[in-house]
Length: 117
Image (cartoon, rainbow, N blue to C red):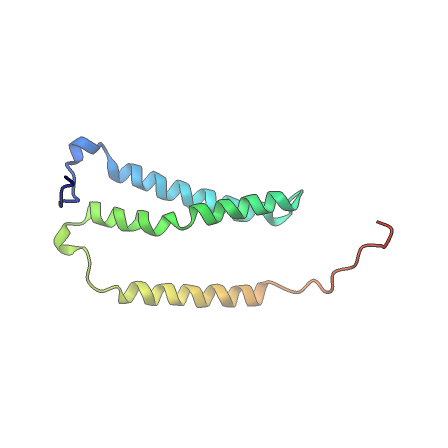
């Protein structure tokens, strides 16, 4: 039977906060590298593989953050309102959209390959 208590004895787990921190920061570092590298990939397959890596690792970050909060904070203080988090996420999303709009420029029409190529 599974225990209803989700908080475990830290002596049995070792340093779980450190392991979660390494998983979170290491995953985000790999995501950052995977986003930077396909700037000029040698082949399209390399860019697709790196973006697949991003799509695999990036969704793990919110879960790791939530677990870290649950392990660090007392149970009575976890939960409640998330208004500030949603406002911050919205502001960052708008800033990212504006940055893309301002930085990414059209390169013009793509030239067609010659008929004999």
